[in-house]
Image (cartoon, rainbow, N blue to C red; front, side, top):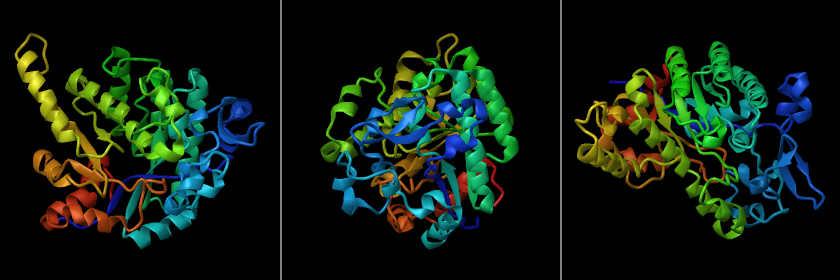
Length: 385
């Protein structure tokens, strides 16, 4: 019987406003990511001197856990600031440990928040690499408060593959156990995930034993067919629906990895599919397998395994605690392929999260529950609990 250790596979920190001015090397500090108000008094995220219009005036919504009663104000431009959306557990490691204790969570893997906004806005590889180095130094320092319970995930940018490999190697030595990648093609200069140059990075990640985590990003991506909707929608009416669309790029990147032979060529590479929910997965794998069987299987040079078999061999997916069809996902892919995540302290997260999760998996055998609650995550990332 496996021990019950509860692991949040995708928690977040709320970066302090001075992270990049403080942790960037001196030569980059005049281009640091920061928060400022414009001439109309609207607070915004400034990325290399340019405003991030998707969050102009609504920076408070970037955090916001437990503030659903204030949702109207958070989504009304100019009503709330980034600081208004903060809770201590988002930026103070001691407070985060108190949250973990209150929630019954033993370990949290930590991802950025502002960091999911700047990718794709920066085209200069050296600057993007400097941004990730600064963040990675910060998150390692944050987690040093209790390195057993607070686990850093490195943010890596792929505009320059050599720089990406060097920073992943450095971050691994500092204690980062995995790699967060933006799924946005602009963040990797439009490279196809199955390209030979990308292959060098997949090899490096495999050798470092650092699983990849594709996570949603939030930016006004002009190449995205949803771009006009993202930037023109009234956040007070449609903000929650916009967040649904953000998962599409993760789904597309994941599908590309499965169907373009990335896992076939890099059998030690591991991928976690994050913040898209899990319920869509079984229908999508079924569809990919069907198309594979009809038009690909048996052809010269074709993949040797079905897409679903590569998923089973090298991937896990994160389930939202309040999803309603998790049972079907577990039945199809197995209790060893599902992890879970709180998304704390973002606005769509909730407290007493394990009670919600228990409604979905509480009827399963204890061994299965233990795998989903934490053992799968520990195994996947090689974490010694």
